[in-house]
Image (tube, rainbow, N blue to C red; front, side):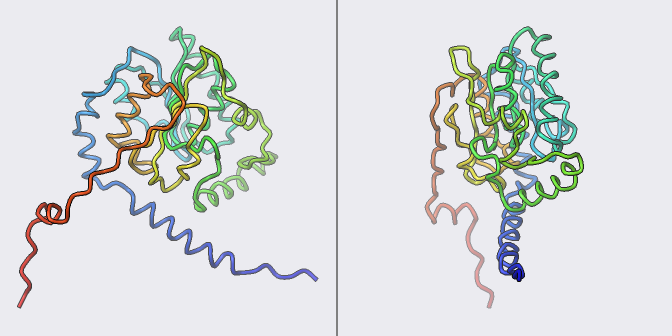
Length: 288
């Protein structure tokens, strides 16, 4: 006789999911933080390395598209690069089918520019950038990823995994795709992503920007042995509007992190209690 499945596991998973959702909401940057970023010298393009007209293709995260990239695209244009969209309207399709559509787009841009491209991918966009580079390394000169789990693609929160599993059931199984969104996927995308990074003097460079306060991806999964790892401060989506991330991004595109290794963020200065209290103002007198 088969035993009934235990109900203990769902009971344990519910609080964990609630904690993850609460943490994600709590880490959303307030409007005044975004306003400060838009008024900063970094966003204006001052005090950061500039490019020389190099083409950069922006690859969006999952459940996002080119519509989320205008701020980053405009900033790249201000500091001397030529940004291009990915033609991804919503990054929810099978990775292999997305790769099949994006590769000809990259080929056309490289031919029009007459030189290799730089790829800038956020989260799942970074995974796509890696697979595209391994498949067609002659098209790419440099890859920079933001909060992308390059070493362990499924090192994400339970909420993200549940959403991906639900998407796979509704969309991929009806199309007869087996193993999609799992480590068992043997499609060309999966094979390319798991293949070694190109080597040689003209091989593309890889820089992975990660944050240890990532509420979606486990930051250890963003560390790669194929390139340089740079710690920045911010949240998973907040990196798209964080001054320190843009400074690191400009340096990465300029070639400052071409050698493998890890660059950790400097620890933040902790103000003494008296200074913090003085900045907040005197405590109000207790009411009688």
